[in-house]
Length: 383
Ligand code: SF4
Ligand code: SF4
Image (tube, rainbow, N blue to C red; front, top):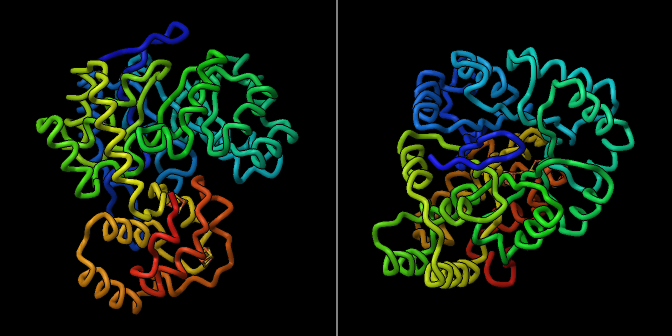
């Protein structure tokens, strides 16, 4: 395992994103499947992964409890636990204080190694800042309850500059991968953060699986360059070898994904010019299809009064435009129309859109997909 030094810490370049553990349904509720998830944590610890990133929201508020239980079996100084203040839902300082205390109880720890203001954009930063949440967390760091203080971010480079002009942080968590580098100007965000001395924690290195299920031509491009590398290995290696990166978070659901990432993190070498050229050609292939830039984070589901399975609908659609069979996709849609969670349940209330970190116009896209995905073509290009 490769480690990166940071303010006296030694952080593994592969970090565990704790929002995609395997799940199981118990009495009608979807919960973390502990029987399958505990061995994942144990294998990660054994391989030297020492950074675990959870959050108040993950797994319907159950991820923190699970992580407390899973990591509590190891010495406290053998892992770094990161969690986050759910800034999107904070309406008062008292509420933030209550949540902060609740997180200690849920995780069963006395300090957080890394603590973040979660998914900041202009609106949520301003609101939390004026409520005094930022100052309160700075105080908590002085008290030793937070060892390192940062934020995760979903807005424009201009807003990132604005936040860093206003407040002081040690690190930030950015959506960074070879597709977003140019398409979403992740390059600029990375530049802004690192030029101010912040370390970058990478989230969505595989863009919620999009960089694993490549369009056919992109897959061919990669295979002919280096047949022995999987698309996931290229995506992870790209991020892990970027200067200024502290750790790359991967939400690993299966042992196979974990082993694949461990292999990448253990045999890292910088990308060559011809590797970068190949990835550029892959990006060109990618941007020739109208994908929905959904990462499958599921935040929107918390707001949907109609229970629409938004990320599943976008995933099916993306799989189709990436080379799936049109006939079988259309027959799936027609069957799904009877489903209580399909796009036709959407009442266009827009509640889900304010919370989407990718700023997707969810209801408009659902409307088009519902009308027939084959009509969502070039003119609706979304990336
Ligand atoms: S706009 Fe549609 S999908 Fe979004 S919350 Fe409202 S009903 Fe649900
Ligand atoms: S639509 Fe947005 S909030 Fe919903 S799963 Fe996709 S990226 Fe996440």
